[in-house]
Image (cartoon, rainbow, N blue to C red; front, side, top):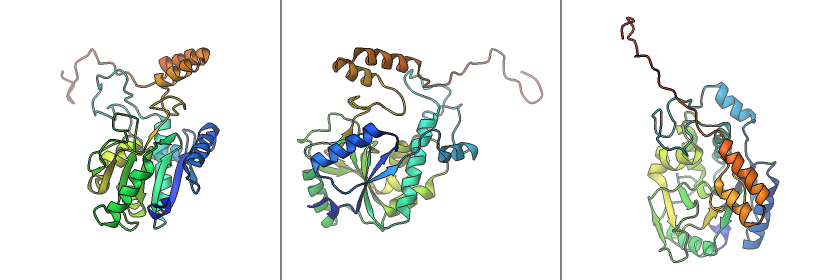
Length: 282
């Protein structure tokens, strides 16, 4: 099976300024035989699209925490406020969905730190057979989302049984989507209330109805899983571990300092005074 038998186009979401990530994609795709792909230019925190979302009041503000809906998740490593970089990811996907919505195609979408695993072609061959047999729906003119790759875990093994299920995985690193599904996501979007992956894979009604997850996952990513590329959202300890393992100890120390001083949450101080009712009485 040729990749074009399953997908009409391959998109890689990437900041134009991310030279290291784009070089990674060029080298990795060349090595595994993906020749035809298109970089979809992503937004960053300073992009006009991000400013417009804030200016229109379409970004959830703290309090409450956007993750749990409370003042405090009770998880010290959880960010409770959407930072501009996270809003920029949403804006990037809105741009891609708008691009897809104007076409009629089945698209493979990857983020620019994706890495495919050796069994990826054999899994896609079996997926193609399931689609051809009518057991899995994936046509450009019907909603369809196939979750194909996520953060590295124990499921990333060649001997994981092949399956197509309704289990949810945060598969922004590698997924396939139809134009009809992109149009439905745009129709449902009513503001940045969560991260792009959670909206696309967990919150959106169209995905709860029409998305499927393919096992074993064919891909993972490098910034969260291995640290060989730096995260562009929140700096992560795994990056420092990677640098230290490479003997780049000064860079590792600098990165750990970045992690320690990075703003992840907004503090909420409880008032020491009792709340008053509208009449002014406690």
